[in-house]
Every structure is written in structure tokens, then in C-alpha cells.
Image (tube, rainbow, N blue to C red):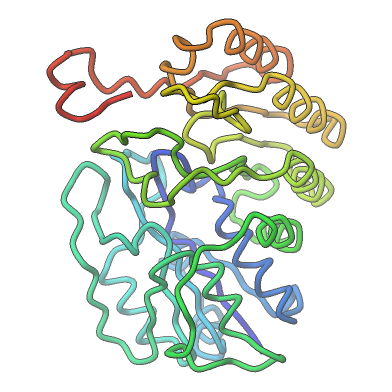
Length: 333
């Protein structure tokens, strides 16, 4: 069997996947297919930009694929220097061109918008054998196959993946980065956890749709970096989490979770050990509320970040407004 993965790009409050970045979701999908018996050479990967100048041979791959997986979704405002996210018309055309099962998913399951900050509309695709994964696309793709055969999509439940599953899929799917147009200079977006631990969520943010925080084991993240590094990756961003300071934070009954500095030291020292000659190690997302509530622990983590990161990085604080009225009206952090 053959599969094609199309990267229509994602941009979320806590995940970025626009070139030169590759989101972890792409690697999870590839790994899920590998675990279901697909060989590496049976899985082709395209960015939507590369398909805009596709060759006849590329079109034939789409037509011959047993499954075409399209990842997409922009839920934050973004301006991109050289890439343009997939459009509904392109999704429709690709789904019409492909002969096999088409699975569409990612943040686009919440609705389509050209960029975050604008109203999202339900995506209506009028193409045969096209399914919208209403939860995690990687889990849906995984469940579609049983004993080497494609199941009826109508019989597949829409569910969230588990941290154990992505621990396996992230390593199995690491090979896919070699098919990225920017390889070997691709920036690998890394996930530590997803879901927001706040009791009251910011009105603008889509992270709450992932539910409670599900933290990946530190060893799994390090092992994924090791797999990517062995395949030639040298650029990493620990960006797929809403607040890096809260990775494996403790719930002590307060409004804000208590940071765990030792966990971050273990994570970063482990990454540097398995990727000794990396060129970029950056991060995204820190919650200023964590810094205010736990200044000593936060400072210890920030010193760890400074010790292990490469130059040119910033810690995005996500302060949308300092106006007290706006903060109250939108439950801002």
C-alpha cells in the first residue's frame, strides 16, 4: 500500500509548522503509518508549496495512493515570508484528483480561516471518499488500518492520541524530514506537552480544545531528538506547549501550577547529549503568570534555558493586553 502526506501547514498558539518548520503532527502521521506496516519508501510527503509546482509524476503518486492525508489549520494571525497555507479550493482539487481514501485533519477540524484572528467557517468538501478527522488526525489514520488492510472509515471512532503512541510514532516517523524541501536545514518543532492547565482559559486561545495537559515523558522527547539528529536534523525548537515553564509542573492547589526546574535541566542536558553538534535550539511560549507566582523556580528554569540554548532566541510571553478591562473580559493570563 502507498500513502501520501500533504502538509498544508499549521499555526497554533502552541505549535508552528510553516516552512522552514515541520510540525510534529507530520512526523506522528508518518510514524502511525509505519507502525501499521507501511515501509518508508511507501510514504511520500509534500508541502502544499511544492505541490503548486508539481510534476506529472507527483500527480500520479496522488492518483495511485491508497490514502492521502492532508494536514492543515491556522488558528493564530500569521504573516509568512515565503510560504502560503493551503486553501479550500486546493483541498477540494487535491481530494478530487486523488483516487484513494482522503483524510483531512489538524486544527482545521475546528473550521477554516485564512489566518487566526478571523472567523473560522465549517469546511465543506464535496469530494468522494473524503473524511474530516474530528479529533487527532494521527490517531484516526492509525485506526484506519488493521492487519494490513484499510478499514471502513465510517467504523472508525474519532479520538485523541496518547502520549505513549506519539512516543512511538515520533521516532518511527522521523525519517519524513528528509523529504522536506528545506532538508537538512528544516526546523523541527518539538512537543513536550499540549493542553492548558489553567482553570479559566483565555478567550482567544484554541489550546483549551486539547483538554487537560498531557505531558510527554522526558525520555521520549530526548529519544525523538536523537532520532531526528541521527537523520541529519540540526535545528530544533521546543515550541509545542503553551508554557515551557510548566512542563511537568506540580498541582499544589494554587491557581498556577508549580514549575519543576529539575525536569527542565534533565530535558535540556539530555538533548545536548544526544545532539552535541546541533546548530539551533530555541523555544516558544512562557506564561508570565508562572513567573509572577513562582519567581525562584522560574528563574532557575530560565537560567537552564540560557545555558543550553543557542543564540538569537526569545521567550514569547503572550501578553495580549495590559488593559485591565480587556484582561478581565477575556480571562487573559
